[in-house]
Structure formats: C-alpha cells, structure tokens
Length: 176
Image 1 (cartoon, helix red, strand yellow):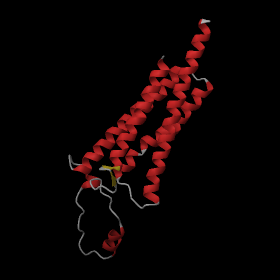
Image 2 (cartoon, one colour):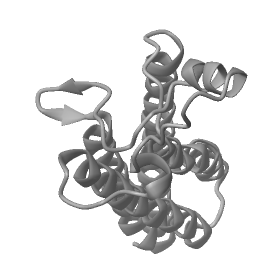
Image 3 (cartoon, rainbow, N blue to C red):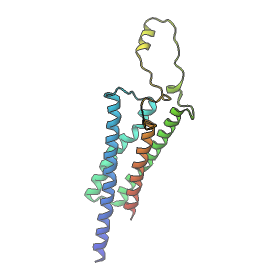
Image 4 (cartoon, rainbow, N blue to C red):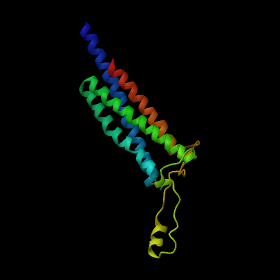
C-alpha cells in the first residue's frame, strides 16, 4: 500500500512538471511568434536589446519541450527539477534584462551606447551618405510600440516572470 501511495505521488508530481514545462513551451513559442509577427508583418524592427531578450525564449522552447517529454516518459524527478530550475533562472534573468530595457525606454538610466548614442552626421560623402540614409537605426531608448502604457520590453518582463513562476512551481512539485 505504501508503494502505491509513493507511485501515485511520483506520478502526480511528474504530471505537474509536465504541465509546467508544456505551459512554458507554449507560452514561449507564442511570445516569440508574436515578436516575429511584430517584426515581419507589422514592420516594427527590434533594437539590439529586443534581440537579446529573445535568447531566453530560444532556450526555453526546446528545453521546456524536452522536460515535458521527459516527464511523460518517467525521467527522474531530480533531473526534471534541475531542468526547470535552469529555466526559472534564465527567465528571471530575462525579466531583469526586460526591466533594464524598459528603464532605458523610460529614461531612468542610460542604455548601451551601441543603440542609444547620438546619430553621427558624416557630412557630404557621396555614396556613403546615400547608403546610410537607407539604413533604419533602431534605438533602444525609443519605444516602437506601446499598449496600456507598456512597451514590448515591459510585456517581456511580465511574461518572463510568469514563466519563471510556472517553472518554480514545477521545481517545487518535482522536489516532493
């Protein structure tokens, strides 16, 4: 009887880990698809900080899918918990990067000089100037799109925190 309870408990925690990991994979995939939609369909170009914020999603999608697959196949809860912990830490770091970017947009602090510095006037240099005029410089301190007072960087903070919380919940379930 005791082994049945233990087996049922282990299966329940694996189910919770599966739900957490699958949820993260779906949320991350939907978020990155939304980012690509803004970029490719609406022509809202990402700045360098926007592109850096995508790295966590590129990690989260395959890792979360792998963890969900492992949970479905009965991989050890310790290994599943470690994978979710990695996801939680990466997503928390991404929320921090998003908060930093939102702060740059609001003018709370200076952003990286490669995307917030002044645009230099090269004078009359013929073809070079014509070429530079065709380049669209995307500055990190200018909001490209805003909804309900939040920029895309602000929404990234909220989404990353939600996924980190889901991963932390899964870590807790895996540890039981």
